[in-house]
Amino acid sequence: MKLDKVRWGIIGCGDVTEVKSGPAFQKVQNSELVAVMRRTGGLAKDYAERHGVPKWYDDAEALINDPEVDIVYIATPPGAHKEYTVKAAQAGKPVYVEKPMGRSFRDCQEMIAACEAAEVPLFVAYYRRAQPRFLKIKELLHNNAIGDVRFVSSTQYQKTTEDMKNPHNLPWRVQPHLAGGGLFFDLASHTLDMLDYLLGPIKEVQGFASNQAGHYLAEDIVTGTYKFESGVHGVGNWCFAAFENVDINEIVGTHGKISFSTFGNDPVIVTTASGKEEWSFEPLQHVHQPLVHTVVSELTGHSGHCPSTGVSGARTNWVMDEMVKGYYKISN
Image (cartoon, rainbow, N blue to C red; front, side, top):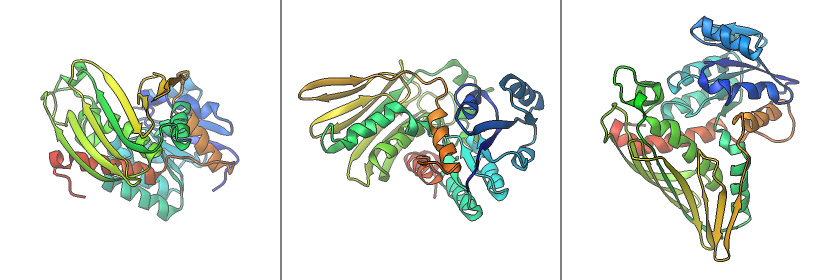
């Protein structure tokens, strides 16, 4: 598939599309946002008017089948990702789907199969794969800045926000039938995908998931250990009912370590016997924009390709499923 210009349609023009993603479709060369959809038509109309989008819909299939839409960006909760991906594929449209890719690895497999059958690309919005700070970490690893990598550790915990304490009006992110799990699926997926990008696929996983605070039914703490195909080991702790907010990853090698956060804008720090070296990066206004650029480049036949595909996105869902399967009694 080769396009002269990529015309986007968004299904689910909610908060994530206001700044993080939506404007990027207008700012990347050879790219244009031409249609948006939301079940509440008034909200879709409001979004279209505020962002200068020519068309709006309150029906997803109408947007998918719009002949002026070349690619569908699915920005709904994960519970609808598979349905809309399959429908877009059947209409012959490439898909750019929010993360996590699906509620489960099984969902992801069905999404991949639908796109392969239709011979259309499937991209996943793990946008860190194209951001300068993570490209720098990949470069440091490629250049053996810390020698041979031995293990990676991730520690991410945060306070329970007030909106998570109302059982009668819980956010979709802690409703497993919509999200796949709790905040672990929403947030840890970024870290796990980023580690897949930096260190390669994970081949073995073990994990424990629990609910300690009792504010909702989904898990609120997960501890996992994993082994990468390269032989690197990893351990991660994610807790969403702690006393403060912490986000730190360390990749440890034979000659040093790389320290960085997943969500913050802290410097990337390399520590070796010679001392410390830091790299700082300006925060991006539209965090999806570098990855959207790679999607547009691929679809228009220019050099490069998108580094976040259905295949890579599904790997992260598999890892998460393995970590929480005891809690949810998952059987893949």
